[in-house]
Image (cartoon, rainbow, N blue to C red):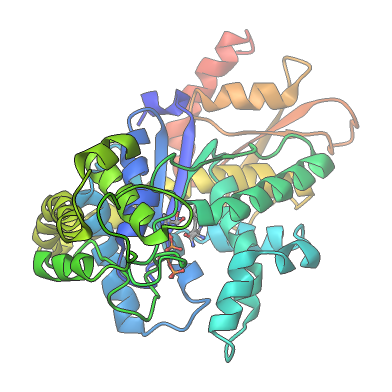
Length: 409
Ligand code: ATP
Ligand code: LTN
């Protein structure tokens, strides 16, 4: 993980609110894998978001573990990526609350996902469903995330996260990195096979409209053969706004095969849907087959999966607490004395920009907090804060940094 310290950061997550779909694979996970070499990545199972809709406890537990197996089977190496469950890192809930206080009622009311989900769950329009984007912003901002790879439906949530971060930064200074969304050029919005005007979604009630990563090849083929197209015959496989079903199938085929829409049109020139639909089904079956087989194998080794979760939560908590406790909370004015046994050592900044000095200190794996509230307003001072358990590890690094400034005794 050491060299990863200089890479840019990715955060993304999926709720374990249902079994993973072909939509979430194409819109999100496939791109997570593609980006994972270039970035330091945190990929999360966002189970706290999932309870905005009622969940059966046993199903939620089972799905979280199965989702981890599917992340790995899709190609996310747990050694290179931090894979973890949101509720295992309490800093998400902590910063979530803080950001609730910097998020406006009006902007939350405009979220299309809130409008959509509250109309589908009219008997449970809870406050969490409404403040969902503030918790999502906390997920992202906790890690000083640069890039958030998501499907097109989440763009609005990344935009509100940017607005919240800028609002916070305007008040307290340069606290949070402003993240960018990454929306893939193809596969950003995979539609239902039975009602192609709606997004393919894991909470879709129509069983034929949605393809799941873990679905059997026979079931997948059956769904594609029944996929809605139109009544055109002859030269009928081409993309256009009026042909929602066909365009969607072409997109799916394009993501599976890497072929462009023009190449697909040429490939099926003169053929009817009777040939086209099973061909798309086959391509999906072959894309998902190795993932399903590997996930089934991993699910038999629960101890291995649980080890990954423990390790992931520890790594994520380390990074999150560094940003939360030593960053946002201190900048907001929360007192330094903490009940967790952390202690503090103050020193003058050797350069005018205390914040830049603190950032540099992170390269030495030590935590420095800028502060100007120790009786010398405007004069940069630093608080050196480490939990007692980290002291052994941090002190040698601190000495090295101090030496580099000629500050050692
Ligand atoms: P739910 O039905 O519980 O709202 P969902 O199936 O819509 O769930 P999410 O968990 O909301 O899926 O999404 C997980 C990730 O996959 C997000 O980045 C989302 O943008 C992406 N995604 C989900 N469905 C699709 C889709 N049909 N096409 C492209 N991307 C998708
Ligand atoms: N809202 C997202 C899931 C999510 C997420 C995140 C995605 C929660 N927190 C942080 C990216 C980054 C959804 O897919 N429904």
